[in-house]
Length: 432
Image (cartoon, rainbow, N blue to C red; front, top):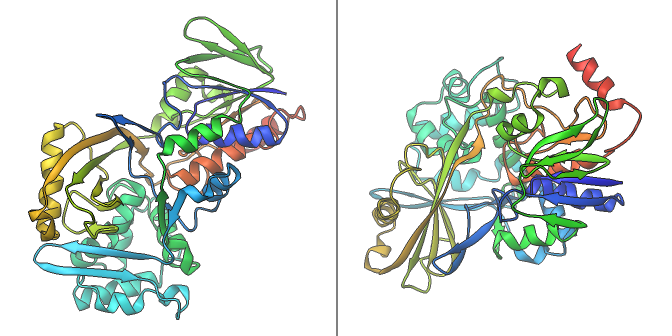
């Protein structure tokens, strides 16, 4: 079976690999010159950098399996156990570290008791709320409202919840649904102690994307798909912006919501509803190269700062991640570099004596969608048995992460092209 996969982000690449395992002939079509979508890399002044600080956790089983099946498991680094340094002004660093001697729900307790980011009263508040993370939230409740309902004061929100949930969901706590935020907390901190371990790629992310794209029968870059070729019963292929039609027995559209709507034309007619409800938030990453062998900041979170996390990718190379950064994404590069350097020096004074060799900024104005309360994310099915959709924004049960992207691509590939009418009947049952 010949399948066209539109979109060479992780969702599309995961679909390519699974379709090839199923024996399909796959044509991968991507409108940009780069593979990997939002998880790619490119040269900045001669140095290849990732387009953002993309991390995975120990619980990202599908993503880890995806990389492993590419033969690239050795390119990933991950902590032996969860450990993060937390920086704040006018205070020594703190460390939150999992211990192997206690069960998952208690593994952070010893370091949490010594954690300087929270006063004692706030620690008690957080501990009480963590005991309730398995409770169902109220309908359409924001996480900010859930925190208020569970007695979380400003210090608890600032020193714990914002530190982890805002970067995970790339949105403010009053924007995100309580269910999505609680999923993050349950998955990372209330499951297997190994689940919260943080890792990232040792190689540029484009290498992973290239390895996956190599599984396709052919790859078409700089080719923009504008519509489907549809006979009313089945999709027969895709139509490109230059008028070319690529014939196919089946199609996977692994693109963002707005572009999906443009390609489909009549999205509800294909059983895909609510695309107009998706809103996005920006992520800015600032790359700093210092004249030093080791900054001593493998992985650190910053309190009361526009910089949520800093990663020491290599000795002397720090990547600062700024989530929910709509107010910052349009600022000049020099201003953002100075901002991040100043924030780091204020909380890690050792860097004041180290010369900054260079700085660069990567930014994505539409990095991820906002998981707002009540938002309905479509699954992979459409009214056409030979048409599937994929993307980190689709209904995978995960927030918009690399894990969600891989899960969506694999789900789209499973059973694609069956002539049983199961997709149409399933959608009719859901939508009446």
